[in-house]
Length: 210
Image 1: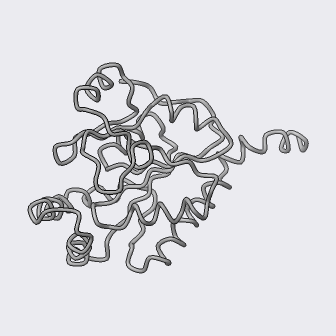
Image 2: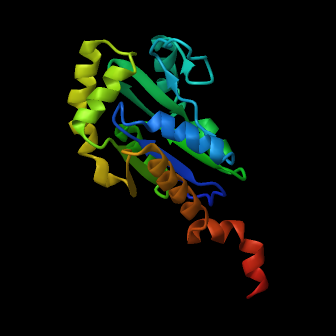
């Protein structure tokens, strides 16, 4: 097992997790518009692009054979099989970006979050909850992207996803979008002025007072 990363990082690593249909992608997109100093990690996946999805903007779409070669080479910080498709995060990209003067955000599932925490124990974990199971099902049906069978499978897996909610530092219920977005921005801003982050960013200033 790889050991945790001990390097003091200038940026925060935000990991956002939610069951399908909870509104995670919409919230993250709005957050990135309002907080330009956060870089979104673009995951690799073996699933086929949906209508309107561009390669390297939404995902890096790769064949299963290529993905499995990347697993064998240790290229992923985390990876998981979800609904029969692989998803993974580039380790090299994350390592490089976290030492820049900006934050990094991952949109992954709870399995991936557990893998990331082993290497980055100071990550900021955020779980997005739907207001109810009925509302979740309604959202999945209204977006018109999935078959009835896929919706049923995603709804059934929600209980497993939510059973891990207390493994995260912050929990947001996405009932009213603007309120949920305000909560998400508040978490980001609080993390930026935490003791651990300010000790790195303000090292020279703090030295003046010694």
